Image (cartoon, rainbow, N blue to C red; front, top):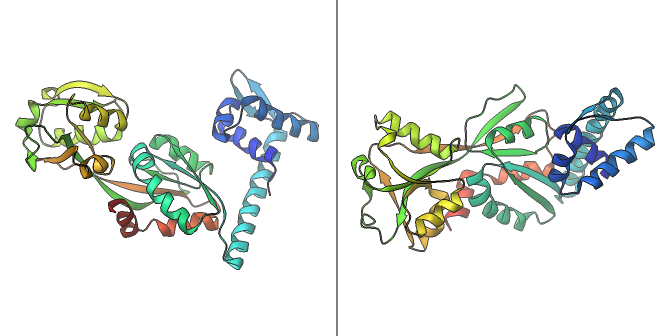
Amino acid sequence: MLSDSMRVFITVADKKNFSKAAKALSLTQPAVSFQIQTLEQYYQTMLFDRVNRHVKLTAAGELLLDYAVHMNNLQAELERNMQQLTGHVKGELLIGASTTIGEYILPYVVGSFKQDYPDVNVTIQIMNTKDIGTAVGTKAFDLGIIEGPLDLTESMETLAFLEDELVLAMPADHPLASKESITLEELKTLPYITREPGSGSRLIFEQALIDADFDIEDLNIVMELGSTTSIKSAIMGGLGISTISKWAIQDLVRTGKVVALNIEGLTLKRNFNILLNNEKFQSEATGKFLDFLDVENIKCILEN
């Protein structure tokens, strides 16, 4: 197996920063520095040039990185072939996920997957779509599952995963809670809680309003919050209503605490996509997980 020092070295080379590498590896920065120093002492050369808070590979570092990546790929290939031969799937699976997917969908999916493959260690890192694209592009992640648009490089591809829809969530005791949908005119009168600028769900909602010739300035925005979880709490606290993923709010809908309405004239659907790097060797664990992400299978897991 690839040594700890080599794994740390590859991560530092990818992150170009010791503290970021430490965070990605769940290590302390001194531990990361120690592993790099161990390699530099072994090869008797500097592997990184330290420039302010960032590091850059030296010529020796570039050479070592080529071999380290090749060794890593060979190890992954060996493990996959061995697992295919023995029928026993194990290993590491690192997934990058957008917020809604990582917080409200993948925990259930991974939990079910682990019942079939208990020896696969799954790590989910939640971040924005752009950063996931970078991580998949540099082969730091085995795959990503994203909820926003992304410019792809030649080595990357997306696969359709799951359809999502934004719904208007409000407390079950709200005066309009008995309706199936509301009009845009009614929406104007309601205290609205919005996500922060740049949020994927906010962009979808605002674009739908523009397409419907609705002036966004007419919204009665009372609060701006930076996470879906905080918006759910604000809705429960009676502070306002908001558009939110149907998957993120389904727990409160099931318990009867919140209702989900449609907004007449707005199309608020989007697709979640799986992001892959075709140049990264696909482990047996990754292959089994991709097979597991069958849409009907996922819906069954989430809706039961």
